[in-house]
Image (cartoon, rainbow, N blue to C red):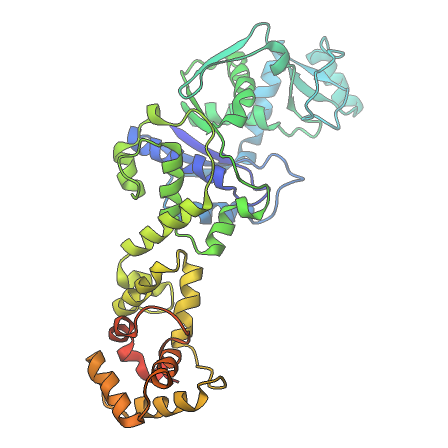
Length: 420
């Protein structure tokens, strides 16, 4: 069982998406279930509606899952397990620094001897307290499939809080419990989670959970700014395709991919954990632009046209003509929309454009481009730049672009709209 765990406290980052994709990919290879966990224990930071947005993003990438649940659904089980550790002498109540249960500091040990009897007294008195797990007596060691053996000392793990003063479990404790409850036995996540993994493993050991679990911590991406440009929403807003994003993120992870352009189903067939890059890699937006353009070239023509409001393979073929100078849906839109938009007749070629417009409106349907051009020249009497420049503006709304002989076959059915 594999899981993708994320918190609804902000926009989904590119590296977070990469972890989700790889969890799904590995689950498909292993023919195991893949579940989604929404980690909503940090109530103050949760943004309403972000959980729904997360699921919508995952759906766009077709990361199908067997189950999705919110961590808060297991609150009672988390509390029960925390009290169990307290009753077994593996945890203790603490009244110091309860306002900062997750702050990274070394616990003083002041309350180390406060047991379950004191717990009952504190509950009765109303004194705020948290429950801490006792820190391990020896190193926590686990084998990572990417990074090798990882060792965390007792002081690094520390006596961390497992239940806050309001009865809410902390992230590490809730995650450890939920992995146990869900039967997750393969944990694949970013390498910024290595110490958290040690804390969660310590929790499972104290709860006497014996199911063998595999770990893999992925080196994080470099060259990503800590702003909106690092989010999946930004990539969508700029016009990048889900298939291209998947392609690039897997390619970054597995530099030994047998080919540069591929789909997720193809990657499932050849992806190998042993080939994952063991060092951090740079995220290169220009490389993503190239891959996005290649995926646009591969798209079904009719499907491609739908991105611009059509259901016509000819419009899809027209769009592909502009892939020599555009790489995203947004850039293509700047080329395609002017073709079908009302034209500006107030410029230098106003007179000539109006002459050509009238001829086109009155002309019969002409399939052949050369015949179309000869007809316009003969009827208009225009020649040279006085003919070619206003005609290009009339048919494309731009001064430059692909040869009109290439464009015409795909717009001839729309001439009355195009020349308006």
